[in-house]
Length: 143
Image (cartoon, rainbow, N blue to C red):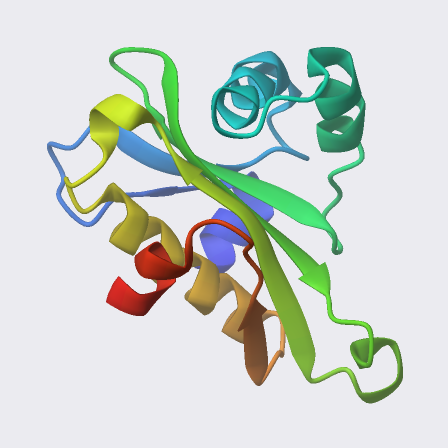
């Protein structure tokens, strides 16, 4: 994971897999595709989404995606941010905007994303990760 944090991606556990985790701060070329994925779940404004995603940084807040490199497609997204109280205590982060492309649901992609983001949060020194959702409680219950 230290290599992933340095270069901005982490290959999946299976050597033959074309799936790779990437941070948007290191892969701005994925912003347009990621914004489209988020818009497919929560329609607002594509341009506004792109501007928000462009603010991703090596420090939090940071958006992460799971990419199928063979298909050049973004399959899933999650955003880590410092939890409100963490500005003082430094122990907690919040995970928001978790979405998996419709065609990739029920395949384990969401579980892989959640596990990876938990590892990233731990490596950043967080002890607690809050999950924030309005409409996907069932997804988090399965995690």
